[in-house]
Image 1 (tube, one colour):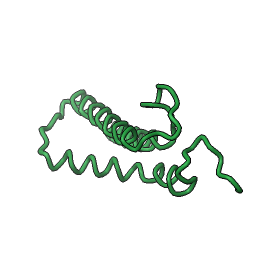
Image 2 (cartoon, one colour; image 1 turned 30 degrees about the horizontal axis):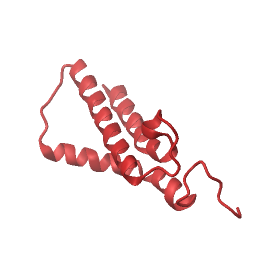
Image 3 (cartoon, one colour; image 1 turned 45 degrees about the horizontal axis):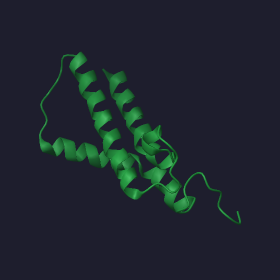
Amino acid sequence: MELSVWLVLALALAAANAPYLSSRLFLVGPRRSPKSGWVVVAELLLLALATLVLGWVLEASQGQRHEQGWEFYVAALCLFLTLGFPGFVWRYLRRGASGPDQQAEGV
């Protein structure tokens, strides 16, 4: 059981940072430079949902599926967004608003 918890957390960390580190549309589509902020938000929500579904599947496979209230899902979304902070800093604060594929001028 402990391994599945760490697996979901590691996947959530990777998924929360993926939209910021890739300039591809939904990680596999054509390159968009710069990628719209709404696309990044849509990717984050889609990846958060995928991570949540993986958690449900792992929990159900262990026979311990518990119903959750809305508070759980709000807290999980906030945790997912917090895990994505390093990618946000990398894309928008450290490298500038130009995106990950363009080199910073004068550096």
